[in-house]
Amino acid sequence: MTSTNFGAAFSWKDRLQVLLSFATLIPFVAVIFLGVGGHLPPIVATTTGLSIVAAAFLLAWATESMTLLVPQTFALAILALIQVLPEYSLEVVLASQGAHNSTILHLATATMTGANRLLIGAGWPIIFLLTYLASRRTGSPVNEIILDRRQSIEVFFLIVSTAYSFLIVAKRSLDILDAVILVSMFIAYLYLGYRAPAEKDANAALLHGPAQAVSSLRGPAKLLTIVAFLGFGGFVIFFGAEPFIKSIIAVSAVIGISAFFFAQWVAPVLTEFPEGVTVSYWASTVRFSPMAFGNLISSKVNQWTLLVATIPIAYSISLGSVSAIRLTDEQVLEILLTGAQSLYAVVTLLDLRFGSKDAVILSVLFWIQFFLPPIRLEVSIAYLLLATFEFFRHREKLKVLSDFWSVVKTTQRR
Image (cartoon, rainbow, N blue to C red):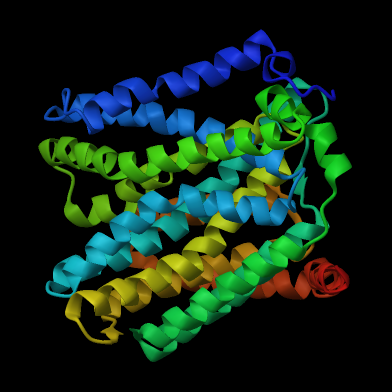
C-alpha cells in the first residue's frame, strides 16, 4: 500500500480497534483527573486497567511500525523503557522511603529481584507456550524460537549486566558508582541498538492490522500517528500506573496479602502488565514471536541496569548525600538467586535459540523457588550448575558473540 490518506489506509476494522483504544481515555480522565469514582478502588482498578491494556496495544502497533524507521533493537528498547515506567515509579517511592526505614528499603530490593525473576521464570516460558500453541493451529508447530542476529545486542548486554550482578553480590553493597556503571551500560545498549542495521523490507512483510495501516502512511502522517500512539501509551502508563497499583494494594490489604509478598510478586505482575499484553499479542501471531521474546530480553536489560541503578540514586537523593546501601544477608541471597537465574537464561541463548527444554527448566525452577523460599540458595546452585553444563555443551556454538561483533562492525560503517 502507498496510501497517504488516513481513512484510506485504515480499514473499518483497524479504525474500530484504534477508536476503542482511544475511547478508554474518557473514563480514565474522568476517574484520574476529575475524581469520578476515584475513592472506590475497584472502579479505579478497572478503569486504569482497561486503559493500560489499550495503551499496550497502541504501543505494540507503534513499535511494529517503528521498525520500518529505526532498527528493531532500538524500537524495542524504547518500548521497554515506556513499559517499565510503572516499575520505576514504584521503585523510586520504595527506595526514597527506605532511606529512612530499613523495612521499606528491603521491599525495594524485593520488588527489583521479584520483577527480574518473574520476567525470565514466568515470562519467557509463557511466550514460548503461546507461540507453540498458536503454531499448532497453523499445522506447523514450532519447538524453538529463533532470534534474529540483530537481537544478539540485547543478549550480549544481558550477559554483561548479569555478570555485574555477581559483583554486587560479592561486595554486598549497592552505590552510586554501581548506578553510573549500569546506566552507562544501558546508554551503550541504546547507542548500538540505534546504529544496528535495519531490515525494513523484511519487517514490512510481517506487519498486519493497524501496524500495517500505519506503515502505509507517507510523510508526516506516519510519524505523527506513531508519536500519537506512543504518546497515548506513555500518558496512560505515567498517570495510571500509580493509581492502578494503589487500588490493587487496597484490595490486597482487605484480602490479607503480606507486604513482602505483594512487593516481590504482586507489584511486579501489575507493573509489568503493559508489556505482558504486548508480548502476548505478538507471540500469538507466531511470526512476531522473536519480537515478543526480544521485548522481554530488552525489558530484562532495562531492569538489570536502569531499574537497579534507580535504587541507590533515589536512596541518596532522599538522604541528601551520596550513600551506599549495605545489603543484608537476605538481600544478597535474593540478588544471587536472581543473578543465577539470569546466568542460566543467557547461556540458553548463546546460540540465539530458545527451545521447549529451556522453557520447562526455567519454569520449574521458578515455581520451586516461588513456593519454597527457604531453599533459595539450593535453587541458586541448581541454576549455576545448569548454566555451567549448558555452557560447555554449547561452547563451540557461541553464535551470539560472533553475531554481536558482526553487528558492531556494521554499526561502525554506518
